[in-house]
Length: 447
Image 1 (cartoon, rainbow, N blue to C red):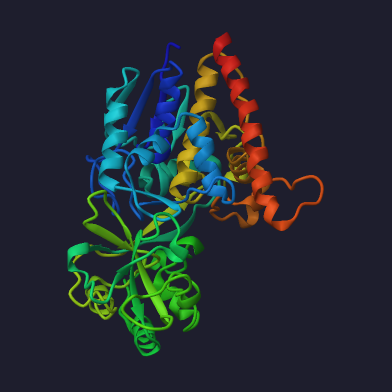
Image 2 (cartoon, rainbow, N blue to C red):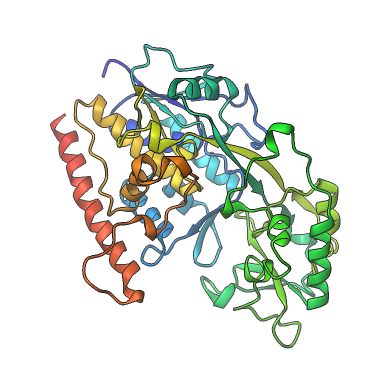
């Protein structure tokens, strides 16, 4: 207890790790380089700033793996989930948040904790040797000096891909003589999304504009960098075939315009981005189009003729380590066990998955500081399925970022009907989590 746990990075993973450690009575120093050193994607100096989207995806804990991960985090006293629940905005069956209020909540909560010290400034290179317990949670925008030091230590070439960012529209600039409120299949409150209809001619013209629009230029070292499939730029999806978007983010099923008869050929959906309901982001419209082209092309969408954009889309580079090769089952670097890694840098993809890895590494680090022996969560839990995947379950030769999904969980024993498999895995996960949580509590009580 004579030394603090140092956390490098104040994103979702670092913030969650700090909360978990301090909540167990262990002091924390949280290092965040912003605002002294800015990034290409962040706009504020707030902790846990959301960059690409405001959505935490499905909140269905019984039938969706990310919804199950939400529930596991809630049961582990997650700061990130508490802030998300407090500042959620309508999003059908998904959990979406007001970005600014969410970040402010996390920032103020951590600043107010007596065992958490927040230090602003870049950690240059590897953390000092006298930091005996460190969590590196620097995410996709790790500073070059730290990236190079980590890669030199683990002896692996960096892996990288691009994440794209979707535009945000001012609600009062949308034409509601054309647009209408409805959730797909009337889920959630039934009217959580703004919908913009297209007929076949409008859709074909839009696809042609995407295919011919001027894209952002890449530097030489970026040209062979792939995209993450879960955050594919809309124009890249369009290049795969003219019907791709109609079976993706622009599918018209489950929606009916009150302004026209028959089914729309395609539909653009906008999701509420802040609690006031003044900003809406374009779902699935992450893009690498140049700013002028975005404004020109997106204003051809019916209902957006006079659209005003609070933010246009963009790209940022996401770097991650080859976790199956360099990390052990407790998220420690094999070459230097005082270093743990959390968040997107480990090769998990998504806000929730990143925060979950922060939670797990925080529990591990606190257990060690309290004199106990960390115990990994069972692979039957969403926590454990992710940890198992990135620390050995995945093939190191082909390792790529991964969202949580039921395919990462061990199969159920016996034969179940297809509709019963996911609920059965979810129930087993929460039962296993309860047992793991009790083990941790006993260790902390004995400390």
